[in-house]
Length: 117
Image 1 (cartoon, rainbow, N blue to C red):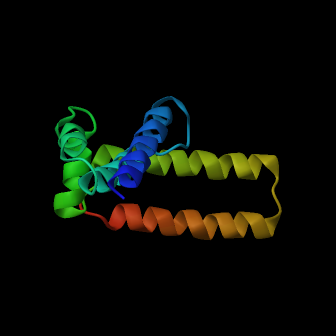
Image 2 (image 1 turned 60 degrees about the vertical axis):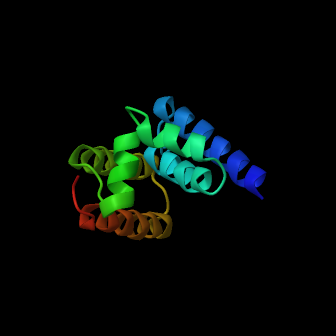
Image 3 (image 1 turned 120 degrees about the vertical axis):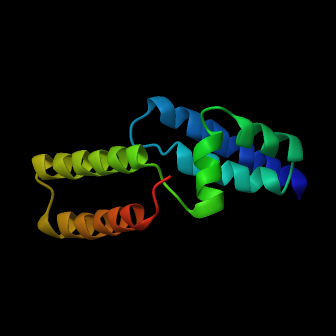
């Protein structure tokens, strides 16, 4: 089972790295997921991820306090606004826009209800 967790962790890291250059692909959540998988499979990979200068601090903030950085909150909010704006520009059906607004509103509520790191 440790191999399955390790493979899932490596896949999560790969998706997270892709998220650095691909818009709308979440980087930090994928790295948090990778830390979860590595904690169950490889102490070495888990320690590497937690001590990484870029990915380590947001993961530790999340694990210790459930915190999201203020910068991360602003970037998430801007991304969500852009996505919803694109939907409006494309003229999606009102029902689709309503579903999207409710879903994205719930996501924003969750993000902004978390403590800041």
